[in-house]
Image 1 (cartoon, rainbow, N blue to C red):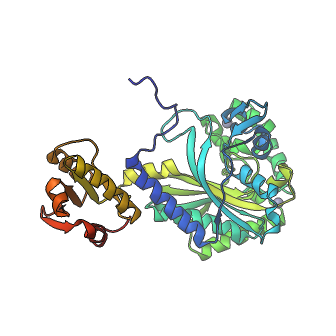
Image 2 (cartoon, rainbow, N blue to C red):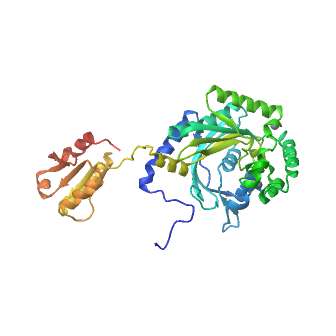
Image 3 (cartoon, rainbow, N blue to C red):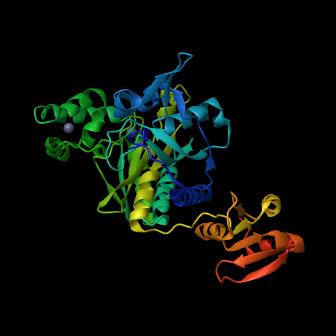
Length: 423
Ligand SMILES: [Zn+2]
Ligand SMILES: [Zn+2]
């Protein structure tokens, strides 16, 4: 066993994994840009207070899962556990409210949560995240939902469906929470300890409980959509109408509240059959109250985050093909010191001319160099020896056919350029 191993819940993304990562990012980026989203990048760490307020004390994320530390200047910092709070902080801090609204942003990057180790759970995981900030229209909710759906469809996931719910707003949520608490008070002896705590701190989350003893209680719980104010009810009705219009299947899921406190109105998940049964592959929602929670002007917003590691695991299991990454098609072999110097010189010139090339290292026989060229999947091997240098021509071997022909050194760049695609 090596002396050092990667920390629990982290991944090495090896060269052989990279084609999947490039492909997923390229498709996500393309879809985002098709709807006018622009890229933003925010710091990997932010002030701890931002997440404590934005994500909410009492949530699992803030209470149990954050990587928080004090730096050498006594600043309380946290590795970001999610994207939305940091992106909204950037929106406020950079005065993006003066731009044409809404501001539509996407990003990629690592998030950090101290998750319990289990398959498919990562302590450092990578998200594709999309936000529409400064827009109330349910069509904005629709746009991020459809983008999430289209991404999964594009990447080969099957049996897509939305799970949809509303978590109300400050005008209607408190009354529902009161009804929910009253109902739970009547079942106080039957529920789990976690739910008793949740009722105090983050009551909607009792609906999210996975404990077996709580399932019948959740089944009988009042539904928030029966307690929405007119504005929230209209918002949901309009969104449902648009989903019907576009033929995107959805189910109203009364238990869907998501883990974060800042959601208002729409919450959703995309479900898909990947490997095995249909299950949630990503989620998001509307967060109209978040900007105020972190000290900004009231600003509506809606977005989603999608975990890339899980997408790629499923794509591999499903055998989804991704385009290979490019690598040099030309290999420079050399025999003797003069030829070696000429090879280094040629490689330098070719790369400047946009011809990707490997050059052999070490002083080895031709057989060993050809073997390496074959393993690296080179299409052409340029062979330079004393004879070639003296005559000013290189032998070029076509590794596919085994044919060998002479190309004048002055013509070599042009010859290779016309025979291999620049990459
Ligand atoms: Zn409401
Ligand atoms: Zn429970």
